[in-house]
Amino acid sequence: MSPSSSGSEAGSSSRARSGPKARFEIEDRSQVVSLWSERFGIPEEAFSGYSFYRMAQNIWAFRGPPLPRMSFETVGLRIISLKDKLWKPTTSAIQVFGVTATKNVVSLGEREAREFLAGETLEVSADVEPGYVVVRSGDDILGCGLYSRGRLISQVPKDRRLGVEAGDIRCS
Amino acid sequence: MDSLEALERYKDIVPDFGVFVKVQSSPLHASVRINTLKIGRPRLLLRLDKAGVKYRALEWYPLGLRLGPSERPGKTAEHALGYIHVQEVLSMVPPLILDPKPGEAILDMCSSPGSKTSQIAQAMENRGLLVANEPSTIRLKPLRFNCERLGITNVAVTRYDGQSFPDYTFDRVLVDVPCSSEGTARKDLKVLLRSGRKRSLNLQSLQVRLLKRALMLTHPGGTVVYSTCTYAPEENEAVVNEVLDLARLEKFSLLGLQSSQGLTEWNGETYSKDLKLCARYYPHQNDTGGFFVAKLIRL
Image (cartoon, rainbow over the protein chains, first blue to last red):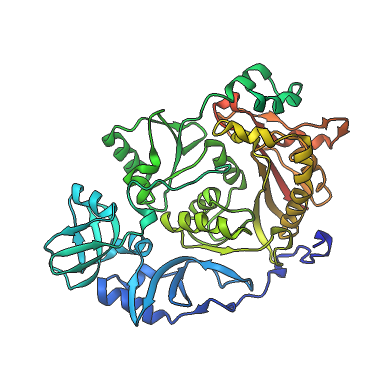
């Protein structure tokens, strides 16, 4: 397009109208917050300043103003994926919000932490309910694990695992 | 060494030209940025010390670390946990000159792989609107990957052609345009095989349109930073010279990082005297890659 025809000549009052856009829909706040509080004891305040959006089978947390009218690929951090009515917290979300978790937390030693980050399944006995857990080691929040009968299955995405070197070339 | 011939045309503009050519064949060591969205600087440095990692903080940006020659930061737990991001030293410059603030509305027009985007998010303390635009579907993946790993919660990713990015008014825009990438030769000399005046002229019209659109999207008094990782004046000063009816250039510098001033003439063309206010970063001046940065204030 011709840059001169693009309109929007100056003036902070000319900010585009805000509002939810087509694909990402605003998700009910209380429902999302209570999922995290019931499972992990994460207080509501951990999500203050965030709004939640849903697209297809994913829920996103966004710490910004109401969205401009544009078409988005992602909005904030993907925090939950929904499959067959089950909700699964993402490792990204656990790493950001898991620091305030008070229950269903599994603590690992240094060596086990590396194995977990490498994607391995560990034999651990922990006082947690079966299902998704926050996995930590000291001050490090490692990510999401799936705990069942003494087995902790790492849910760290394949491309985020320890030892996998991500391509990060171009000018950067 | 055919690839180095492409640099011959810069003989009269690059200081210590012989050293400039010679340094192209010496590989760069890795460098990383500390991601303060996930870890404080003291705690991260303590971890590196404990692990015996050799590093030296940048004089002009304490969150940037040059690593020793044998370090492979991409394979560490610190990388997997998003505590650090592997980023070339000079790539940290444009976000510093953009100087985004928490709560502002910022656009990163050519965003992938998200190194500068995530540095902007960090300066914004994850608050405000950060739109990361990337037209290429294939390049969306590394952008999303990095934003997730680094725990960025205020970024919204779009996939527009930057030239026709929809109307909105931003406080600041970063335009790190597609370029001939001559400044990345220390990573791969082959990049020089494709470069030359003809290729640069081919890229120029896109670069001008992207920069013009960026300025149209910025409010008066707002900041637009234009950057490339090439030496070609056709993609640098010649592009900025085209938009001086929309913006004025502003002087900047980073204490401890050497630069050369922008050119006011090249290949028989003359540019505005103000183009001296742009910065050219050469690899032999700071032991880095190469970059060009212009800071523009919207009129």
